[in-house]
Length: 407
Image (tube, rainbow, N blue to C red):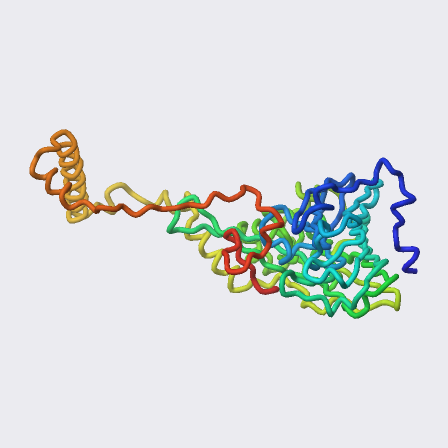
């Protein structure tokens, strides 16, 4: 079975096989690759992925330093450095229905003498994912993870944007990993393969009735405001919370006429989505041991929902009840405003006077007491798109992202 799952790129159309020059000659680099088909990953359709030299594919939208943290497809994530050997290459092949990415004769940077690794990941347009291993010179569990994470499996996460009230126009993005598949490393040896079949999720349902009555081991809920079925844990989590869907879905009722058109983010109805069941050459393994997500509102949901309600505009009916003159401004408040305005005007006039009269007593007083050395603020100019070369630097901040525990 493993021989059948291995894709021999040497026998494929030479025009479609591409050897990535940059990835084949650098360390800790990542490059975007466009797909010729829609690849369903955890129910979300991808047309672009990011191939990394470290033996994995990044599936997130935003490229940042923490590529190895989550949102990955990793046949064998490790500290591979294709630049240490002329025979090391990163190859990919797209035939219109599947994408094959192969790490060919790559070596570990911190242990070159272990030998070369050859393995590949195949992404099918049905959502099926195949990891195939041709050359694994050492047991995967023995690979050091000091300088680079060592992972085998899948992961996905959603990003929540938080506004920082103290700093206007600045937002903090927090990454929450909601599901992960970890494969047994001891079973990854020479001439082995792992086949993962996608399972259905709530995102495939396009009407309230089918969503509520679904029996797919997920707590599916229908949000009328978004016209979407979800468990509350997917990449559209931000929209789900911002539109108060956790509060709306508590009653589990379809009190609004069902609509059958698809949500803009969904391009087609998918029969199979995620999470994943996995099948190896030795037989079918048990599903992922990670906890399945549910749509029960968490404490974070409540806080976000309350924050949104506080910032919403007052309803029109409550505004009608207000009659002019029922809430007059207090005299003390008016006097306070006038006092602040007088102080501001006086400060402006004094500044203008000092500027035009540098030899006045007030100007000399300030000049004599100015600091001899003003503090200098130094900023380091960073790249607008951090490269994989900056993944998880030791002792440095991580580009404003915060990695959270698994949901």
